[in-house]
Length: 107
Image 1 (cartoon, rainbow, N blue to C red):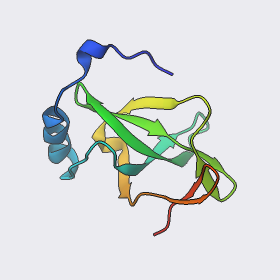
Image 2 (tube, one colour; image 1 turned 60 degrees about the vertical axis):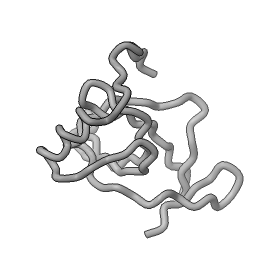
Image 3 (cartoon, rainbow, N blue to C red; image 1 turned 180 degrees about the vertical axis):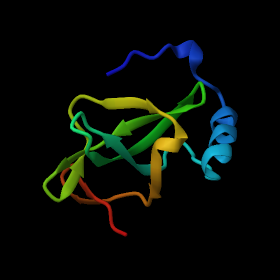
């Protein structure tokens, strides 16, 4: 998990909203679920899902979920990264709890 300088946190998301409107014409909000495609070392793109935690210096702090079988779970150790709005592929509806700590994204 990355150590984040608390002094860089924004109290509002104006900077992120302005940056993302320019690049994607999309407004994001803290608490939304989303999908991000990340490129692996072998060049393949894989989808990852998570939720927006904060906006820091024009980038979104994302807490990622882990895929386990056909469901998603929150990992034991938080997986948090800063991502530009241009890396967000889509906003998702909140997942449905399908079992103890297991969630499913239903379209």
